[in-house]
Image (cartoon, rainbow, N blue to C red; front, side, top):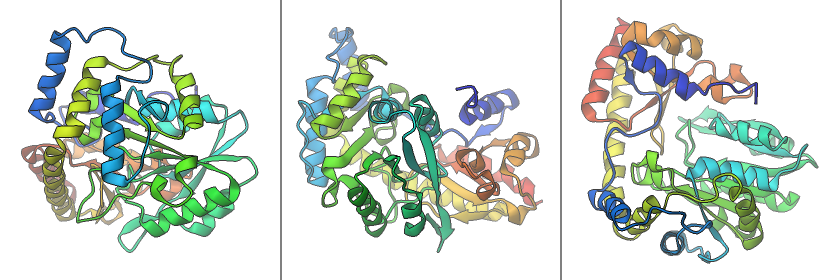
Length: 380
């Protein structure tokens, strides 16, 4: 792990604190989730749900997840043996990779990719093989031929993140079909990170890869309450997978964290059943915030790519006369009093993302407005 060091999120958040800058870097909301859900957590704590819950997760949450998968996607997962509660999606990803990959195996991921993917693959002594997402017609996408060329006899899994962080792209049915075809032809497992599944915009549909023909039996589906209900600090996620795959992940998970916090699980079970209307309102608010930030970034001189989901907007910094996102983001507090994330750190081929910078819009309107006002100094 020596090659990984401190994450870019820790570095930039510390920079924001040190300089008093507005933090549009790390993707966490500055408001809380639904009040009734928060009260359920308080009630759970006060009623004594403070000891170890069952390793696979409290039955109430596993049942609620099962009901949610069926209602939204037509996928039937048994709460007993096919659903595992984890300490956020990050643990789910790590436990899945450790469970299913052997030293020397290869895992394909689409770059730019969330930074924990590379670390998890390294811990498994496997090798990450990057397939690049490139802007095309205003959105990031991949070349199916490049995906096929990346597959070797050592390929064990493809890690699919949609809605995609950090680009904001939402894979289309055709793109997912291309991934599914490769998985089925070559006997590859799909690991799907779907933490932004409810946060898509402009009527864009999120399609789980597991819903495509022949994919449920070879897919480990990962979700989380953190983004859906604006409680990133609760670290409550889950895995849905066929028994053999879910059991392998559970075997690893029991020796990593054993179980996840009981009060949060009980509150999330309540939210999955009763607060999805709140989530619909959140989605509408985030779309407005996205548009607010995009308009401001464009006025400041950035080239802006329109995201179809997540918390994030990608910008091309070259119209402002900059070419290195890492250099710019380290100077941005001094230049404009704002912190962002250099997208190049999420690439194996850093030169392909050197000119992109990511901004988060999951913030209060007044925070976005102040950040935009400050960023206008760049064009001045």
